[in-house]
Image (cartoon, rainbow, N blue to C red; front, side, top):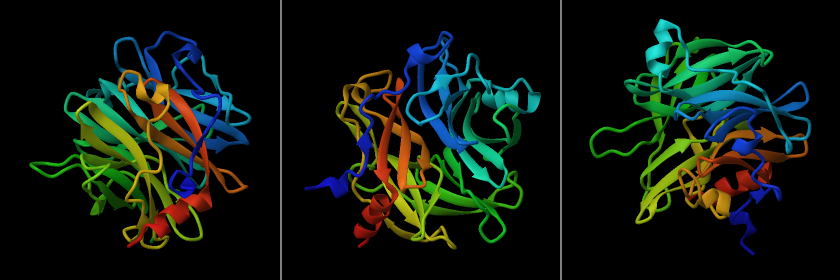
Amino acid sequence: MFEHLSPFKRFSSNPILTREDIPYPCNTVFNAGACKFEDRYILLLRVEDLTGVSHLTLAYSDDGYKFTVSPSPWILPSSDPYYEVYERYGIEDPRITRIGKEYYVAYTALGAYGPRVGIAQTRDFVHFERVALATEVDNKDAALFPEKINSLYVMIDRPSAMGQRKPSIWINYSPDLVYWGKAHALLAPEPGWGSTKVGVSTPPVKTKQGWIVLYHGVRDTAGGRLYRIGALLLDLEDPENILGYTPYFIFSPEEQYERTGDVPNVVFPCGLVAEDDGIVKMYYGAADTCIGLAEARLEDLVECCLSSKA
């Protein structure tokens, strides 16, 4: 009766990846960026090693369900003096966006001064290079749009708040992926399921009605923080214009692997792959311990946003 409030259906064999699937010692695997490349599915896994520092490792699949993990990490914290101090404690939570022939990875660089957004690029998922540290601290949860708008690159991020203000979702622009500005606030925490903070989860997916973006909302409870997922619909030509969004959550921790782990009661997607048949695959971190998969119809996500508009 209320299926329109919960458009995502979990894969029956979840979780699809755990630390037992990583071919080298680690603590956990979670929060993976995702894309299609040469008819294969790619996950860029956040793997936390036994010291507590995260790096990024590739996994491949022909069907989007069963993945083979590379035997060694792909992106480690940099030793380059420019980046090292800002990546010393790990690189985390990648989001992959294809723009033209390039695949860009927006990630969280964690260092001595706090988190900031880094951007890397690749064409073949063999070679990569860092493009920039795109923000100052404290900033994270960034995703790039898959095309320029008004001749500018567009990025959503989440600068941390000062004073009594709570972390919100922002949008900003760049001519070259290095220098960013024209920042504009998109969505702030509201009383209810996302009252503590909100942040972007997945790169925007283009539909006829607008850009679909999944976001996470966090609520402090007596038992700790609870992470759940909502959706935004942004105007195609003016993404600062929110056409609709879900004031309720559309995906939340329910299964044991989502409720029990290093950080309990967390579902945290970083990758959303749109199929030709209108289905989207959402790859999400569960309890900061493993990776799950859920699927929905793209048109249902759009409808969730539009039907909720006041």
